[in-house]
Length: 349
Ligand SMILES: NC(=O)c1ccc[n+]([C@@H]2O[C@H](COP(=O)([O-])OP(=O)(O)OC[C@H]3O[C@@H](n4cnc5c(N)ncnc54)[C@H](O)[C@@H]3O)[C@@H](O)[C@H]2O)c1
Image (cartoon, rainbow, N blue to C red; front, side, top):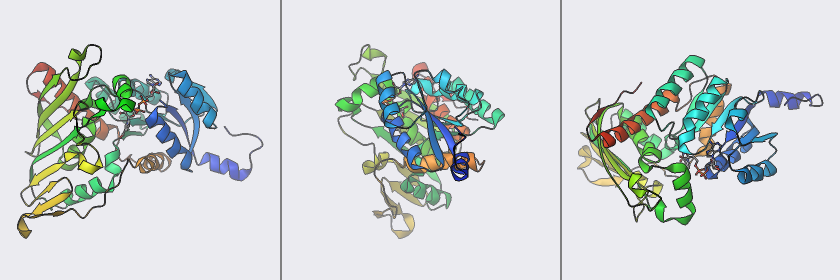
């Protein structure tokens, strides 16, 4: 808040900053608190979490002026410009819509939504208000995946006719993550499959149809029979490419993460990429290492910086509501196909 005793310089600094309210201060929310606090274009003003213990701990450790357990209250604060959403997946859409309706820009973690109609609503409200929405599809900020995007766009792979990527991991066997999976992450395909499907949409354009298969019962939550533990979807893209995406938390091994490059493979008429190697027709089809650097962890600092720049410079966010929304629409269409037991047309915006 601007105060009477602020120096001119302090006031100018303050006015150039985007004032942030964070909702959800679990492990991801805390990582973003660090990013916002490190970035001179941001000022952390308010925090929200339904867990009072977590909320209090963060309020004590930071210089935030307000802390609340109710996101409906946070979105009304007049002294915040943007809301950053890091809650359980099911709350991403209601918080995003409430924030937009109160005139706030929004950064929202993936998945944008867990219901198809919420994806369309968020795209519409973002279009009609002109407010910025950036979806946390962080792999687009990773130089490795950006490098592949440039190669695809430059035509180095030729016509890509088949591609696949997986989020196969063993989180159900990792004690520190198990509880967050039950309370926050829910279905692996909707939560984590979003990351890898987004890469394939980014590279290959829009999907038009999907069929999906899955099974249940590997996780021993209450009512395990209701949980889609493994989902494997086959997409037809407008380009003609066929694409396979699978996700589960229940494997006994890890194929997810940069070590395994999310098992990403792209097969084109001129070259194929399999994880971190490339084989080109013109050099005899032998695999060689991709000349792209890999980083460990997620480049959240870059994501936060891009979001702040989009607001300050009034430009389109790197992964806006339509981009993040169309990725969730493709994922949720696969869930519909799975539950209906038949192929589903995909209506991206
Ligand atoms: N982009 C990425 O790579 C990446 C990585 C990790 C997590 N995430 C996303 O971040 C989100 C949070 O994940 P996490 O690992 O921090 O989970 P977490 O369980 O550690 O934290 C979630 C927090 O949200 C709070 N919360 C839940 N519902 C709420 C509500 N309605 N209002 C206020 N607070 C609420 C919980 O009390 C908890 O403190 C998930 O949606 C996940 O998909 C993204």
